[in-house]
Amino acid sequence: MDRYAEIRKQTARVRERPLLAAPKIPNELELQARWFAGEFGRKFQTLVGELVEIVQFGFWNREAGPDFQDAAIRLAGGPILRGPIEIDLLDRNWESHGHATNPAFDDAILHVFLERSGVEFFARTSTHRNVPQIQLDLAALRDGAAVMVPLAHAGRCVAPLRNLEAERVTSVLEAAAKFRLRQKANRLRQRIEVHGRDEALFQAIAEALGYKQNRLPFTLLAQRLPLAFLRKRREDAEALLFGFAGFLDAPDLDRQRKSTRSYLRSLWDRWWKYREQFSRLVLPAKLWKTSGARPLNHPHRRLGALAVMVAEWKTFSALAGASKATPLVSFLTDLRHDFWSRHYSLAAASASSSLALIGNSRAAEILANLVYPLAVNDDREIWNDYKNLRAHLSNQAARIAAARLFAGDPRQRDFVRSLVGQQGLLQIYEDFCLRDASDCASCPLPEQLRRW
Image (cartoon, rainbow, N blue to C red; front, side, top):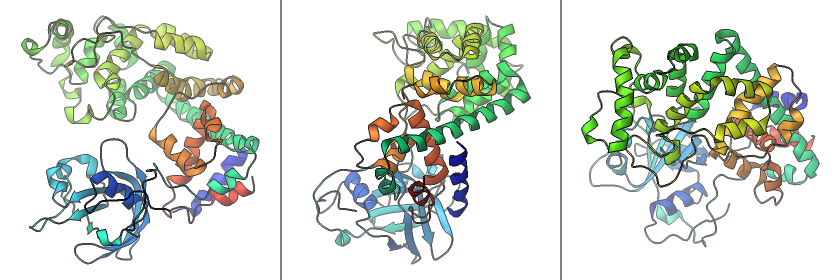
């Protein structure tokens, strides 16, 4: 871990081939793929005549929002700008696709399109910022056979890592994972010092259930509705959670399905007596993201799971304190709810089979981000147990990091099949890939790896 921390300090220095044979007018995915491959080049002119250099093409965004994230450009010879890039077939698609009013596009640094409409058009964000635009020229394309569309470009780390023995690559990942675990432990300790052990754990559980799409509203709920407050009102706890979340704002029960109507009525009957008193603390609807996620991850279901966690807190707290993975995962994945074990959301029909409130991947997230950091703070020796955990998480950052560091390396799967390997990969991605805006040119990691 100390050695990884040392090479991490070097981040202060950090400020291919054709993919698709496109037709005369490529479809949008083909256009994006050939842009990402660099086939249109790196230097362009905006519609107002400013020079644009693409320093880093970024990474494919497989979720809601602009097509590429963490890109870097230099506009008119100025400083490097970092942010997302959106690519459309037509310039007016920025408006017709709703990007102008979608906050997910507010940080866009470039709008790329192929064809211009007959009228002058500006790409504006919801904050009324003008996004620079460039038009692509099909004449710049070379013919090429369709091969693959990579998630991210291979980085300069590929060569030194490929030349390292497997044991040495594993030692790099383990050092980064151990550093990451210590960082999480420090953050959890700070939270415990401020809020106490149970409240800190409750806030961490809420964050894990919110995942990245709804981490903020779940964190706000756990802060505005402390665990101690909810446990003193156990009969009303679930209604309080849904009421504070804004999901019980004068529901039209007549429009609901029969099973949902009964459940909502039970919540409303308990919430109404608190509603006026706590109206100022109800979360605004715009905070919640309900699209772009799997139905099992809908915030309604996650909130139902949090309510069950409140009811079962004594058992969870004891298992978390023991830091034993198997019984804790069994406890989390066996949790059930009369309504939410059969429904995806308040608007969905009843499912044909039972649905897990907390799946294996979320249980692994809770182990990695809460239980083992807690054990580190308690000075318990858990590293050997931690190393034996298999990876259940599969997120975009991990896939991008694997593509950047291990492209074409047949040993890649072996390196990231464990939770430690994946956590180490994520730490390297955050410390180096995300801090680099030079498309690897100025990143110190490749040279550090050669000397590892």
